Image 1 (cartoon, rainbow, N blue to C red):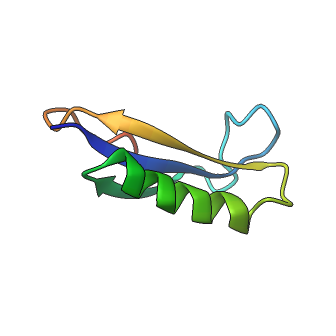
Image 2: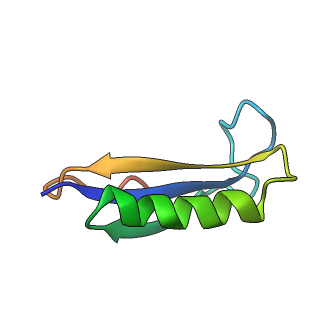
Image 3: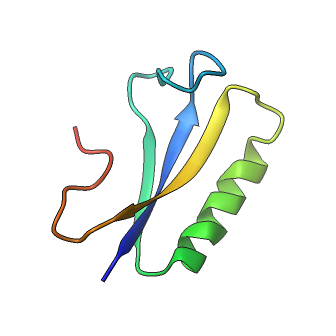
Length: 70
């Protein structure tokens, strides 16, 4: 069964490569894409006026590590 994570946050530039605090925000895991999309939508709309903030949905095989481990 596939799992889904919402990943992102504020970045130092619009290339979205380096997070401001050195790490990305991770929400999840979610069992369905639809649930992840609901969380993504809320986070995206809460930062709609900030051009350096972006969130995305990442799919994960349950056998792999989450996308944002330290």
